[in-house]
Image (cartoon, rainbow, N blue to C red; front, side, top):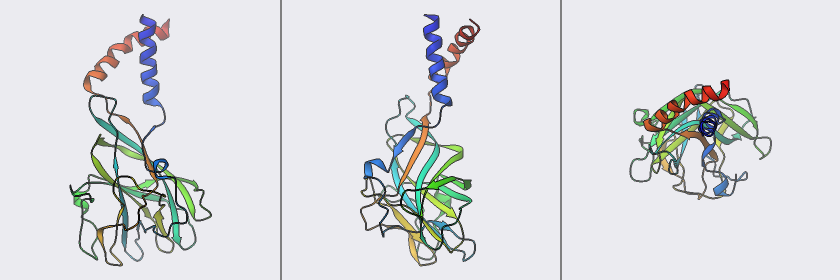
Length: 239
């Protein structure tokens, strides 16, 4: 019996320490990336010309297996493409989580020629390093992966919006790749240099290609059970 309990604790600890599993997939259910899409919009913070362009897409996390109903988002993976210019390494990205404005649009909307109202964002992760590799859509396509410096806590069943923005100066021009289909709402974009208001709904039935990785947030009672099992784990390890 003691060995069985200790084994359960080992499995719980192993799952906690493992790589972050995907908790939301915006690529596979949408038929994969649409590499030939002409609907891709710029999502880039440029310090040379000084423009702010962004694309936000919505997500709803499934029911949490824990009674808390909450998730920790630790990792973001996405596919991006250079719209114009020669592909260049992108050192960092801004990853921004927006709440829904309760009408199917991301919060932070502002008039043409103005950046979004960042004070309404739920979390802003600036200058996050990301690994990159070939994206499968030719020489301008890349896959990216970034681990957030601090987990973003999100409730299950609630609509959020994520904006992934490259920190690179024009040229080139970069954007998040589109998928063949769409789930939930359509992406929204803005571009202060070209007077596209934040947030303007996309006319095309495509989504942005990203996945989210993380783990459920355990309830305090779950943590208590885990802590009670640790002494048994130590005894099991010692034999």
